[in-house]
Length: 68
Image (cartoon, rainbow, N blue to C red; front, top):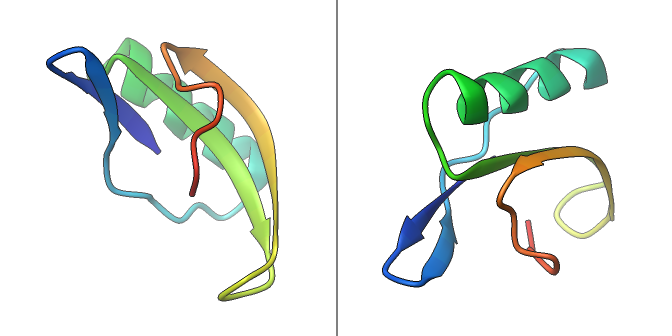
């Protein structure tokens, strides 16, 4: 999930599904480093619609308490 600045606030972009945790980390890093977002986070969601979320890795500027 990418994050961008809107004024002084960070706003989340669209979530993307990935085939594996490693792919999610690579995609998040690319969103931050290559596409120029303020930051990005890779996470795994287990269960839907309510379930457990594990943040795998963050890049750049990401809110400390972001909700997915």
